[in-house]
Amino acid sequence: MTQGNRKARRAWAAARKRHIRPGHVYIAEIQHDPDCMIYSTERTCTCNPTRILKDDRGRELARVENAGFYDPLEMAEVMP
Ligand SMILES: [Zn+2]
Image (cartoon, rainbow, N blue to C red; front, side, top):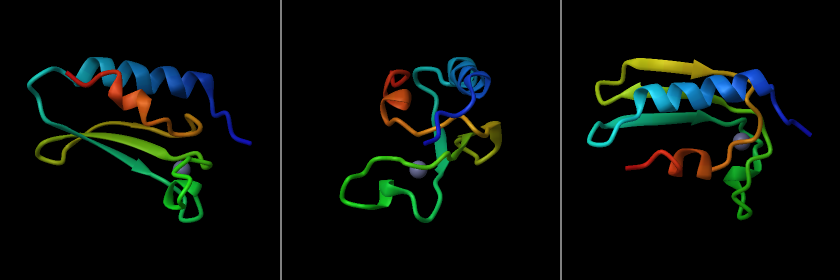
């Protein structure tokens, strides 16, 4: 069971807030473990992925590790 680090989760939230703006293109790269259940029919993250936010040129804006399970809603909330 991986809850991740509260500080890391806050860092990820802050990075999204800072970099993601309506009308701007960004890429969220979530690096799951190969054995994560996100790749199963359940589509539920059971690992502790590294989250990377990139701009439309592929430049890294933020990288957060150890923020716990990935929840797709964590990106949906910032969509314009
Ligand atoms: Zn995962």
